[in-house]
Length: 277
Image (cartoon, rainbow, N blue to C red; front, top):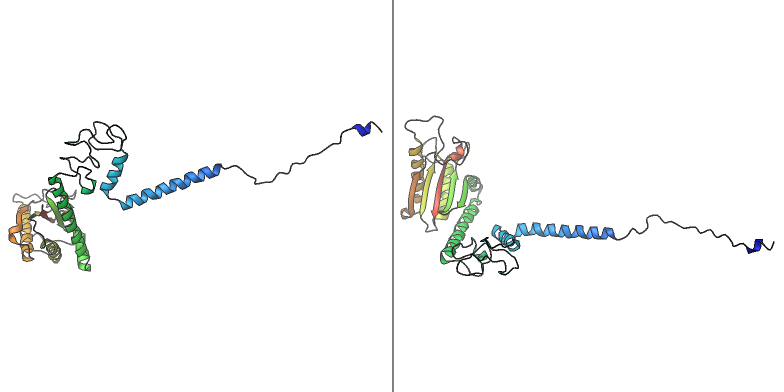
């Protein structure tokens, strides 16, 4: 009786397990990384939409490493602060490799040294020609007829000036058959170009182009036809108010400069009106 009283009592401990307990904070790190990545993605998309090609190139320039043999300036933090040591006349050149002889395309990226007088004049000329191209597009949207006419116009700026290309499409020719008699479409296109060109002082160059024929003839008519169409376009522009003194050149290119891989394609029938610099 006395021996049994000396035994220690038996204690049974039951551990209560609760399902779905705390699993740590690792998910918070992953979520934060995801949110950061999404923010960077949307910032990148906004920048692509809100900047020009030259501005994007400038941003890429800033983060590009600089090496001594690279003429384009970068954004390094070395001895020269990311500037090329080969720039002419002065060392600091920021932007798209701006220098006295190699001016940037846009004056906004010209850098601390600016651009040469010739480069600045060229930039202003490009901006003026771009404004003309934009005005041409704006006037094309004034009516349904003009809107349809815009499908036959392509503009581009070259070293020579603003090229306004008027071209035919299948079923929509610029001239009747193989003659130089303009269709109503050509009349509309010339009206559109003249409405913009009459306010300018630039000289005008006109080039006629025609598609190749299915048979090569001894007396190939493409030379005479292309020149006749270019000459007819000159007369039409003068009738719309472009003074004769501005006509600098009228050329027939025959079928020697196709823009379509198929030399007989209708797209090769075109007239190029160039507003010279």
